[in-house]
Amino acid sequence: MYPSRFAYEAPTSLAEAIAILDRSGGEAKILAGGQSLVPMLKLRFAAPGTLVDINNIPGLGEHWLDKDGTLHIGALVRHEDLEYSTVIADSHPTLAAAAELVADPIVRTRGTFVGSVCHADPQGDWAATMVASGGQIIAQGPNGRRAIDVREFVLGPFTNALAYNEIAVEAVIPPATGTAKGGYLKLERRVGDFATASVAVNLDMHGDTVHRAGCALAGVGGRTIDANDAINGALKGKTLTPENIEAAADAVAAMAEPRSDHRGSADYKRHIVKTFVSRILSNIAHSEQKAA
Image 1 (cartoon, rainbow, N blue to C red):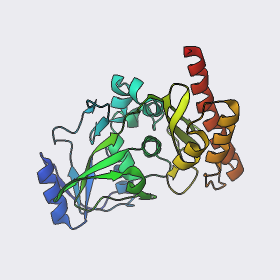
Image 2: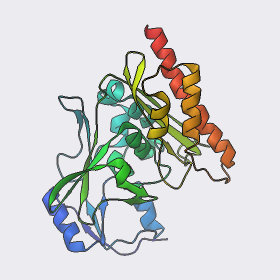
Image 3: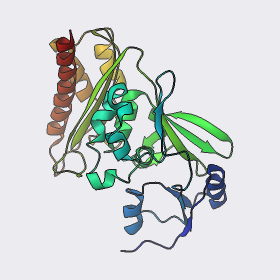
């Protein structure tokens, strides 16, 4: 199947790109990495009147930590950039753990972090890490910039909070106030397959005590599932004892909304969520004991 006809624009500035979107009246799509959009075009699940290729706009391909440790990820930062990043290796362990598990090596060379979050796939890896980490998407449109909490940005399956004339220019993730700990685990039948279940856990540790805990799930519901309150309620102010870890794993597993399909039963997927939460937290506890 071939895509429907569309116009192609390659602006060289954000102002020019936003103007094109504004004139489109909602009939344009942004092309960054294209690893989700192009297959949708070929299958005619998407049929925009105009593609706006932002790859010629300077300043969108960098990721960096500012003075207070906040992580900024530009709209053209590729999955592969983060997979080999020394910037996130120590500062954002949840993202670092997820980076090598996104899709497959070919997709990672071209797909983008921000584009993946915007795509809002219920099985998307990066949206889960963003929710667990308390991140924001920075959108820019005709009226300037605005910050959108990712929990309010991902509205549902393949639906985000961007206006038709806005571009997601970067993702912003706050630093830990203490020591950042975290992990990401994903069950897939083969490399690049959709996740049967995946879990992102992000902890802010003060000594051996959990100051804040975040968690999000992918692949076990019709959207990215925010399990922050569940894990934070189980762990905040506590140490990672076996009993507390089990309580947190039970609380998070209860948030999953899996459906039985060819990848497994709903009970099996919920069990995977519990196992992954327990495994991530146990690994963190073990590393803390070794460090002590």
